[in-house]
Length: 295
Ligand SMILES: [Zn+2]
Ligand SMILES: [Zn+2]
Image 1 (cartoon, protein in one colour):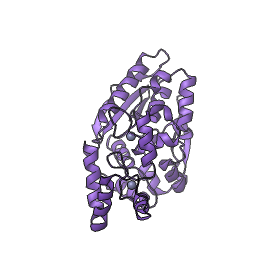
Image 2 (cartoon, helix red, strand yellow):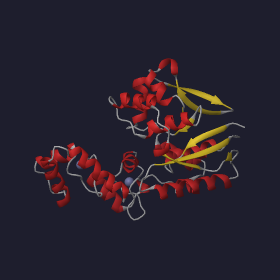
Image 3 (cartoon, protein in one colour):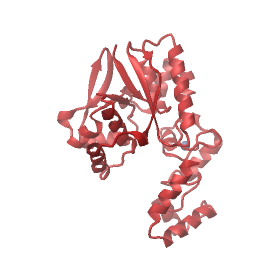
Image 4 (tube, protein in one colour):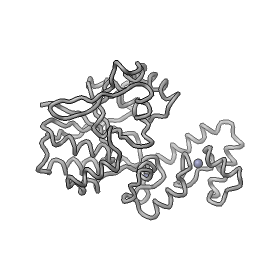
């Protein structure tokens, strides 16, 4: 039986993939990579709950293998991949994980590890793929996925995504995933997902990048009133700090310099002053962000 390696995060997209591919007669090897996120325990709980749910679902045809947990820091270095990543990200934004996902796949000799990028309006992977080449649909034992079309793609895209399989979510928005799960009677599983990097009182924060993307796709059911307020306050801030406007990103500075300071906390205004007085603000800010993520 085929083994499909699937990267899981606990979020909607990768959970959708597990639920989707579990209907085929294959082995599913779930993989989770720890990256020192404050949300790790929430992500692992979501993953374990969803895998249990799939195992107990009578419609499941796949064999679900025990979850592999590894750490991003431990993945073998591979300059060829990392250099390609940096060449691409000098032109377009793309999360750090796309460097280590490919390095992980190559290190373990996997011809393909499935990731669950989507067709979301702000999808960074989509923009990179469209600029540097194309994907082509493939089929194995009845199930579909995508891989980089090596003939039509730039060598950096082939290097960065050569061992990556793209889930059927490639053609879907998050709303479409939710709709499909609802139609298949899988609402119970939707309640188990987790996506926020910096939870507040055990709930999604409304300020981190994943929270923002769920808001942008109008998935409001995942948020309470407090997180909706935090989202409204910080949506134009590039790096909210302590769930507030940061005071130092381009957007925040512009607002402060225009005298629009009403929504900034004392701490944010102090950070602005510090930024203005420090040439090495980039390092300071990175340090600040790291401290928040460690909390
Ligand atoms: Zn969040
Ligand atoms: Zn800001």
